[in-house]
View 1 (spheres, one colour):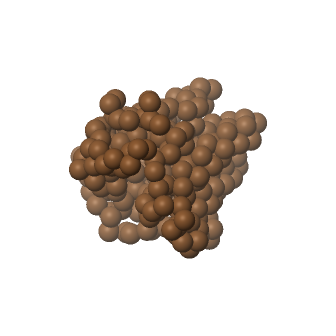
View 2 (tube, helix red, strand yellow):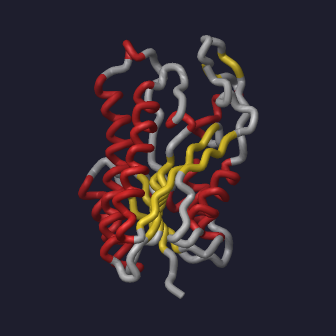
View 3 (spheres, one colour):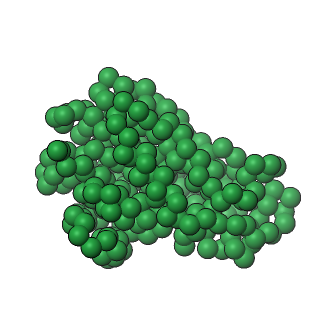
Amino acid sequence: MIEQVAVVTGAGSGIGRAVAVELAAAGWRLVLAGRRAERLRETADAFPAGTLPAEVVPTDVTDPAAVDALFATAAERHGRVDLLFNNAGTFGPAVPVEELAVEDWRAVVDLNLTGAFLCARAAFRQMKDQDPQGGRIINNGSISAHVPRPHSIAYTATKHAVTGLTRSLSLDGRPYRIACGQIDIGNAATDMTAAMGAGARQADGRIVPEPTMDVADVARTVRHMAGLPLEANVQFATVMATAMPYIGRG
């Protein structure tokens, strides 16, 4: 049996950490990418006893050379890459559109969209060239890939663009047994969403507490998507806190 190798970006916290731990428990060998080595090591230390050791590769996904080095390291040490969980991202400043600085817009676009493209491109190259050929890319979209929150124009624009990235990768990957899907997540309980319990701005301007869900439920969904044979694909999955204001958000 060929060992299954997964690269997880943004693996130092939140959804990335939860997914890495879940995949490790399922028998995957993990390559952990993120800006801070110490946070990546904390993720590796959270793996269940008896799981395979992880590779920790500090990476700025907005840097093409760093991304290429990440995937070169994965290939050199493990011979292949079977899965990319393309997860690194940021919300950016929650300010009205007229107050959003161009440099803040560019920072969100660079990380959420260009970074996702760079990682997908490197994974695609590796998956196309390896033997056996193929692999899977799972992009982390968002509920904001469907509908926006107030004061989130950069984040929303990039997450809509990630959906286009997913569709194009799915089409272009067909000849090479490269599957691509997207998970759109709503209100998973992480550091990024901690403030929602106190209150989040709604479309009518009110600040209202919102329900969250256990991030482990997101991780289990990614594990299911990742574990399918390459002949099957979850193209889009939406996983959200049941009572969050999405259906009917207006």
